[in-house]
Structure formats: structure tokens, C-alpha cells
Amino acid sequence: MTTWVLLRGLMREARHWGDFPVRLQQAMGGTVVTPDLPGNGKLHEQSSPTCVQGMTEACRSQLQALGHPPPYRVLAMSLGAMVAADWAARYPQELQSMVLINTSLAPYSPFYRRLRPANYLALFRAFLFGSIDQQQALILRLTSNHLNTEQQAETLAHWSRYAQEFPVTRVNALRQLYAAASYSAVIDKVRVPVIVLAGQQDRLVDSRCSDTLAERWACPIRRHPTAGHDLTLDDGDWVVQHVVDWIEGEK
Image 1: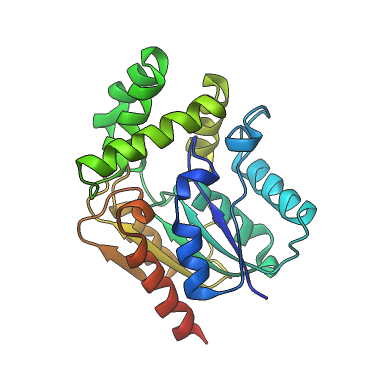
Image 2 (image 1 turned 180 degrees about the vertical axis):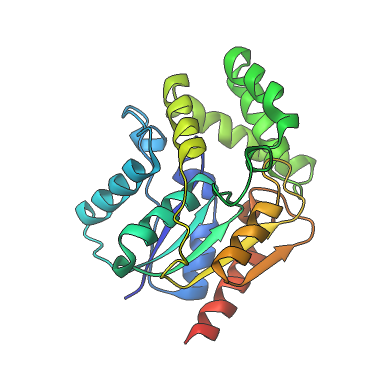
């Protein structure tokens, strides 16, 4: 039975996937597992590793402890996709395939595309001086394009509750940010089948980072013309359909 592993990004946890895991499972079957990176979600009391490699090892250990042996299909976003890239580089035999969403990797893309400079000051102010609601509202504004007013209010209420129940400390946020900024992917072509999905209206990470990655790894890319960084939130059905089409094409 296929095991899908879903990995979120910086300061995000399993619940931020919303109902996407259910949609993916209904379309693909198998088992869907949503481990948290240390420092986030149910693991918020743990120290976040200061390197992506440490996050990879933590995910592998969690899956083994939960009784989910490899190989896996990994669907990962942002920082989670960096973990997937490291996983594929060091343990390719454990992965059947990867779906990488709105990620950015050194040395392929420069820092000013990996996190848009226009956001630096707002993020700095929000996470040093802002309330939980203000922080989550900023994240929602930077990562989602498609929600209407009612959906935004509902999503923000959920996210604020998550942050109160399982708070990510400023120290862990900085450790995760350092890990993401300092990670450099291998130059060689990845040895695991991979597809890149990108929201072309991503306000957090320049979508050209996905274009560059797909070009360097000679892998397919699918671009959503209006979605933002949180592609599974903006259009989860679009993501599922492209995953299904790609997996079917790989058979």
C-alpha cells in the first residue's frame, strides 16, 4: 500500500493542510501521513533543527515509529520541500516520487527570490511585536489569493487557535529560518521522479524559483496562473488533479 507523506513549511503544522489530505487520499488511495517538523504542531516543545538534514532525520524517525516503512511518495511545500530534496539526495531508495510545491533552493535561486525583500520588514515587525492574530493575518495575506472574506475569517480563526494551542517559539522560528536559508541542494540531477507545482502569483517566494528548479532537474512543472504560496489552500483540487495525472503518466 502506498504511503503519502505530506510536509509543510516554515512554522506550519499538520492542521494547516486543512482537508487536503482527505482529498488526496480519496483520489489516490493508500495512506496519508502528515508529520510535523520539530518545533511545530504536536512537536512544538521540541527544538527545531538548525539544518534541513536534521529535519529529514526527524521525519524518517517519526514514520518508522508510527509503523510506516518506506518507500514513500512525498508531497511537500516550501521548507518541507527542502526536506524532501535532502531526503531524495541522501536516501533515494526510500522515495517513490516527490511533488514539490512553491519551494526555493540554493544554489539555484538567489536569496532575493527565495524570500521577496518587500516582505522582510512586515515579517520582522509581526513576529517581534505583533499579536498571534496579527501574525497569522500577515501569513494568510502573503500566502493565499483565492479565499473570499468569509473563508479568510474562518481560516484565520483556525490558524490563530493552532498558534495558541501549539505555539512556535521565536527561537524555533529563527532556527527554522536559519535552516532554510543555509540549506544548499545537491547540484546533480535528483534520482527520484519529481514534479514541481507553482503558484504564479506567490507573494512570498518568487515563482521563478520553481521554474529554475524544474529546469535544473529536467523535471515537469505545472503552473497555476492565479494561486499563491499556499497552493493546496488556494486550489487543492487543482493540486490533486495534477498529482493524479502525473502519477498515472509515470506508470
